[in-house]
Amino acid sequence: AAVAGGHLLWGGVEIARIDRESASDAARSIAVVQPNVDLALKWEEAYREPIFSQMERYIALAAHGGASLVVFPETAAPVSFKISPEYLARLQLASRGSGVDVLTGYVDHSHDGKEWRSHNAALLVARSGRLAGNYHKVNLLPFGEKMPWSQYVPALSKLEFGQANFIAGTEQTIFESSAGRFGVLICYEAAFADYTRRYVLSGADFLVNITNDGWFGPGPGPRQHAEMAILRAVENRVTLARAAYTGVSMIVDPAGRVSDRVELFTEGMILGAPRRAASPSFYSKHGDAVFFIMALASIVLAGALARRAESGATAV
Image (tube, helix red, strand yellow):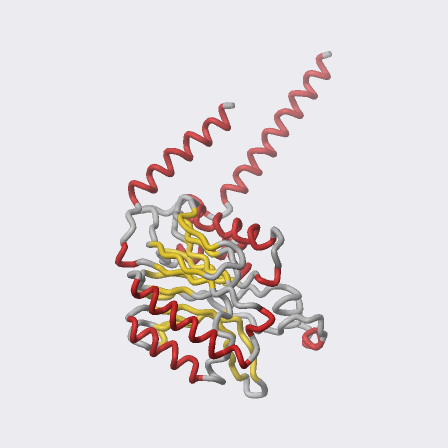
């Protein structure tokens, strides 16, 4: 009872502190867009025009709603901007015309001198129209985005199980936007607690999670994936904006409360202003140290109880 009560009391005090210290600024509002385009059609060339028209429409709507940053999901732009630069030009024109920054997921390409390499990427277009930042996903999904150990055994990448063969990025990127500084977690990177806290330690004011969970279907997978992302906001006491292609998209405050969301298989947009606690959390500063402290305490306690039981048995 004391342990449970202590957790509830501490939680209430901490949430009150967060609310007291972390005021939101409407001038730095974020718009999160959920396109909800059928995944069976998304990559068809014939659907590029309606997809980019939809993106332009939401950029204008977000600007009208007072947003300074618009976030589109993982691979929301179903093209490589290096191969089809005309579509990047459209986003730059829309961003400049509406006066908002635009973040979108897309498939980037690089050339190693022999062949083109694909990257699961996120690109920030500033309100001036310039390219303000790019991030290549570091933690690729095994068997979905790469064949495990293929970087060591190239022959493995030749195996075909329906997976993509992306090349992993090598570093985290802090994006500078009109809404503040933020780090991007692509898809299941939001399950990596230590990777996320390094964004906050590097100066991120808030977190952005972009994902495409449509392949999960209508089961519990998309909701479970979204619940994992909520923990990253709680651990670091920062706002997390999540844009999912078919859901669940949401804005989570530093205490883990979902202020707004778009449910599964629904098209829509939500807005919210980022907040963060004035001081970093224990987890942000020390990471998994709390786990090791608790594990050590459990071992010491178990040893003490075992010795006590042994002493009692000997006395009898």
